[in-house]
Structures are given as C-alpha cells and as structure tokens.
Length: 265
Length: 256
Ligand code: HEM
Image 1 (cartoon, rainbow over the protein chains, first blue to last red):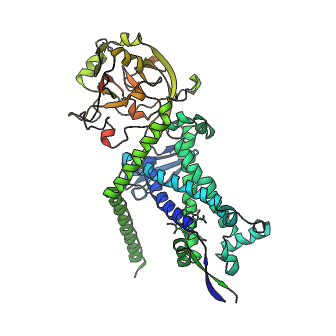
Image 2 (tube, rainbow over the protein chains, first blue to last red):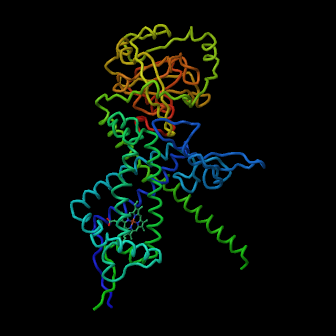
C-alpha cells in the first residue's frame, strides 16, 4: 500500500464552501435573533395567535420559577433553559444561539440581510459553476452502480459502523454523502432564499405567485424555519462525519484541494 | 478527582467556552469592519427594493372571508397625553389633520372633510417586523390626491407623518413619526385610513387616522396621525433617520 495525494476539490468549490459556511453560521445566529421577536410559527397567510403550530412561551410554575414551554402541533414540552425560558428570562432561543447575544431585532435583521446577499450570490455562483463545469454530474450525482439497492444498503451499514471508504473507493463521494449534498445544494439552499424572499411584503407585491406557491406568508416563514432546521441537522452530521472519517485529511482537502488515499502498488 | 468535581469542571469549562463565544459574537457585532460590511448590505437591499418596486405594483388584496378574527395591535395602545385624551373625549370632533410644510396650500381637515376626499377600500395583509401577519379591511382617503390638493412644492422629496403618541416617553425624541418618499406616498394603496373592518378605527389601531403603506412592514403604518409635513429632507427631525423605529436602528425602507 502506498499513500498518494489526489486532487479532490477544485478552487471554486473550496472558496464557495467556506464563504457559505461563514455566511451560514451568521445567518443562523441572526435568524434565531429575529425568530425570538415572535417565537411562534403558523401555517397559511396569517397568524392565528390562539393556534400556533409551534410556540415557545414562558409559563409560571407553582414555586414561582419561570418554565419554558415549547408547543409543537398541540403537544407541549418543558424546554426550560433551552427554549422559551433561559437565564430565568423569557426568550425563544438562548443568548448563546443568537447574534447579537442580547435582544436586538434591529441588529439581527441588519446582519441577516447583509449575510443573505453573500449567501445567495455565493450559492448562485456555486450552482452555476457546478452545473457548467460538470461537477454536478461527474462528482455529485450517484453513479448507476452506486444507486443499486445492494450498494445503498451496504453503504448504510458501513455508515452505521463508522467504516468509511478506503483506497480507490475513497476517490469519490459515497452515495449517502452524495444524496445529502444534493439535498442541501438543490433543495435546502434554494428553499432558504426563496422562502426568505417570500416573507418580504415588497417582494410579495413583485412576485405574488411565489408566496402563494408556498401557501402564504406564514407558511413561507414556517418552511424557512424548517429548512434551516434541516440545514442545522445536516451541519451537525456533516461535522461529525468530517471529524470521524479523517479530520485533517478532510480539512486539508477542503482548504488546499489535496486528499490522501492509500492504493495498492 | 470525584465525580462532582469533574462535573463542576466540565460545566465550568462549558460556561467559559460559552462566555468566550458570546463575547466573540458581540465583539464581531461591534467591530467597525463588520458594521461597514453590514452597511453595504443594507444599501444594496435598499437599492434592490427600489429597483424592483419602481413599477407601482399592488400588494395582494384578499376576500372578506380572509380577515383575521383578532387583529393584533402593537406599539402604543392608547396615547395617554392630555391632548389626545381631550380629543378622544369629544370623539375627535375637534381633531384636525394638518397638511403643511413644502406645499402651496396648507390644509386643515376634519374627519368629515377626510371622508369627502377620494377614498379606497382594501383587504390586505399586515406584516409586523416581528414576524406575524394579520389580515384586515381598511378604508381611507388616498394620500396621493390629498397631496395634489395641497400642491407639493418642487423641492418636496418626503412626506413626514407626525403622530400623537409618545412611544418613546417624554422629550423631543419620544414622539412617534414616520416618513415616505413620493413614490410610496402616491402609490394607489397608500391610504390615510379612518375605518378598519367596516367600523371607525379603534384607539389601539390608531384612531382617528392611521397610515397604510401596504408594501412595507407594520412600523411604517403610523397610527394617531396628526400632521402631514412635506419636506426636502428629514435629517433635522428627531433622530434624523426618518422614523421612530428608524432612529432605533430599523431600516427606513421596510419592504423586507
Ligand atoms: C465549519 C464547518 C464546516 C466544515 C469543517 C466542513 C467541511 C467539509 C469538508 C471537509 C468537505 C469535503 C468532504 C469530502 O471531501 O469528502 C465538505 C464538503 C461539503 N460541505 Fe462542508 N463543512 C462545513 C460547513 C458546511 C455547511 C454549513 C454546509 C451547508 C450548509 C456545507 C456543505 C457542504 C457541501 C454541499 C459539500 C460538498 C461540496 C461539493 O463537492 O461541491 N458545509 N465540507
């Protein structure tokens, strides 16, 4: 066995990836700040304050302490110190999750919209490049052979046992990884931008059909929150797998482009 | 090391890391470079909105069945100034809307006068900057024809709405106010509304008169309007940013 270094990530992918990661973290933290101004979600055009789909509210307990209650589709959970109440104060998400940490809807909005430009332009350029350069179908689309049930099944088992591809097989993304990336770049990232725009009354006047397609402004806001939640989930799994499958090799490949694999003579 | 000590240590380390992260975020927020970047973003957002909304597009209008059963009121619920209380006691019989500033003919209009002006009814969605939406029906005098009646001077660039409520307490900066540019002032859906859901405007919703600017967020829809002033610039008014919330960090153009 010899160790060789292959070229894994092209420069445009690397730049777009890190710009996106930075913008994503700032968008998330400022987005939670904005959410905290009214920590409740609804479906449809308008808010039915008596029947939110999701709500994070403070509620007094018998001993006079504040408890945070999170309601989802009619079911109630005690989420004190995380959602609804933290540091003894009523707030949706806790201070450590928001930008800025103290309550400031105005500053949260300024950050969010500035980062949204970066995120949307970076994402659009990345998608355009991914499509035109062939990256999409060459590197990200599962091959016919990868899409066979037997292969998929084996890949799931390997992930469950934290066994990652080695040798020649490590030259390409595995099939679960490909699905995750495709879901992120073709579904979740575009959804974030579109549902974000549909919360704008100005944009709604320019393109009324789009907010209708999402089922109304409050639905667009709920979908915005849900797809952000999907991205957070991806982000956590993504980071774990980056760390577990060879942290330095992975990080180096996303920074310098070079990735080490072991191959037979 | 006992289990308790270790737990204490881990919790302490967690808290320290959390503190560092928070301080880092707030430090980033205060950094002049970051603020300059954000300022660029804000300017871009404004330009994009002005470019997209130049065509006078209408906000969607809804059907009577869509009206919210409970339309939330926000901001001031009742201006507790002696002047306003006196007006309210006489059911606004002595109330006058003053239109002045850079106009050829200053106006002073009673509610009855306003009812005689070109009117419009619309059922629209009200979007609060906090994130919620309510749908209501509004009827009022269209701002455009009223301004034409007063005759704007050539130098007039903005319309400022001075209100009766002191959301910010005593002092010159406590009064609520808002401003629009001429494109929004003359938009067909921009109203001085005296009716909501078929009844005279209630006190929590801005009696006797509130502004409706349907393509922007709720804080632009000034309540308790007392005076409309045409100006060349709003830099000399209160905090100089063109509105009560604008002076407190919110965007002047509130289309998103
Ligand atoms: C700071 C945190 C992050 C780190 C350390 C990180 C690390 C990496 C690494 C090492 C790869 C290459 C994987 C491989 O070669 O097998 C990668 C790819 C990728 N990451 Fe991340 N990532 C981060 C944040 C994010 C975020 C926030 C997103 C999206 C919301 C994201 C989306 C992606 C996508 C779509 C790819 C595939 C890119 C392509 O081939 O076109 N990453 N990441």
